[in-house]
Image 1: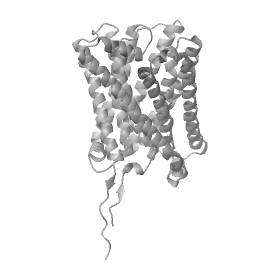
Image 2: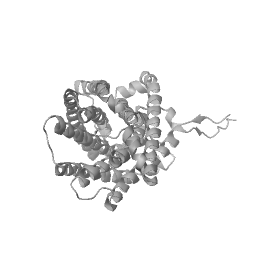
Image 3: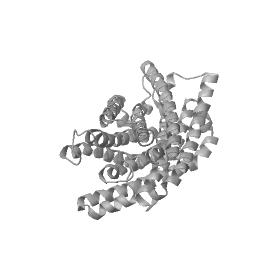
Image 4: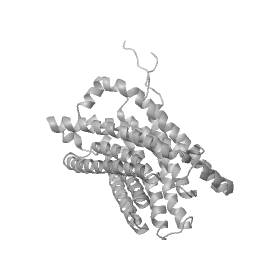
Length: 403
């Protein structure tokens, strides 16, 4: 008998959408190089023309860095879209299966919000692709912003409907399993709503049309509030269950989900702050931004230490990352590292540099930026390791026929 060829990804779960989200997040980390290291006068983000101008005068080392950023954006955005399509093609059959029906009837129902989370991330990724690779895009961007608002709003409606069905079932009919709530997996819907909100906030920060910015600001604020309220409730309930029952080992990576939520919500608030400044007479100081970003980063570091401590104590890494066992939940470990890297870039540039604590491109600047880059590289390695473990075929030992 020939050995059976199997791979973990053949046992599909909605959490495989997190592989797409992680790849999209890594594309964003490469965009940070361009965002803060390439001059972009006239608009809040770098575009194709800014990159070409920088390459025309850059040193060989800086040119190599720009090309590296472009390559990183292209590779991981392509991976993001490929994995999104791969997951979407499996969603319908899963929902019609017995496994999907069982998931929809239990607390795992919230895993389906990984779908709108991935969709929102991919829309953000496609916008970045357009900025850096499409000449003249900024000249027509005001026509694209309303389309982006419609796209993100549609994804937001999908997320709200999924959350609504879950809340109606649990609160309307009861049956919430406190013992099975011993992780922070229930925060996934809040993460999805946050990702929708940060996408809606982009036109608020970038549009020169006051009406567009105003609509974006209102919609983004709505999803911000809903995400925070829902997330706060689920955080408290999850900690309560873990204190009573201990953490579910296979779901231990969810203890770090607050980290990417903080980055997404922080960028959302930075974008709204910019919109208020440009269009509505609201003015904050660089010192205000430094304090805000420092507090946000502190929350992330606290949850990172908490999560890594529990991962170590439960032996998660030894079992599911370096051992023979696999868990689709391991993909939840990519977003926290990516989120820390991205928020560090914002903290360094819009916080420390803006108030004059360090000079841009000084030794201190590159040392701190090096930490963000190291986090990025470690998450690239983790994604490659996980993809290898989950998507490459494995041959099961040949079965010996019974005599």
